[in-house]
Image (spheres, rainbow, N blue to C red):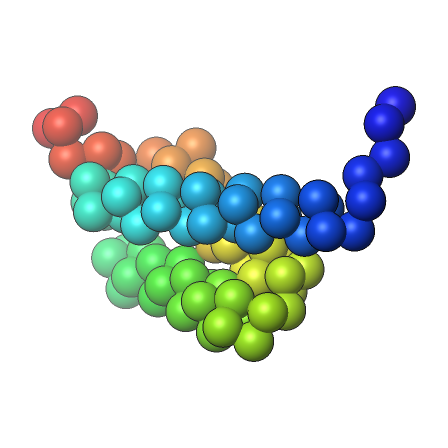
Length: 94
């Protein structure tokens, strides 16, 4: 396995975080809640997704790469869980 040099690792981390952030922001635009659970609970979960997106951007500005990456991974985790539990769906699925 090839060891990455620090500048290469930083560059890859920045690139991957930005890629995940853009993809998540697009994904959110195309989702809507289902009626399987109290809409307030789904709304609160989505507020957490948006909070983690905000945190990611904040950490990117501070060049805190690991924290930015962690925040976007958490956001994706929440969104993925909502999708897998059929609490949100893609707007095209209706």
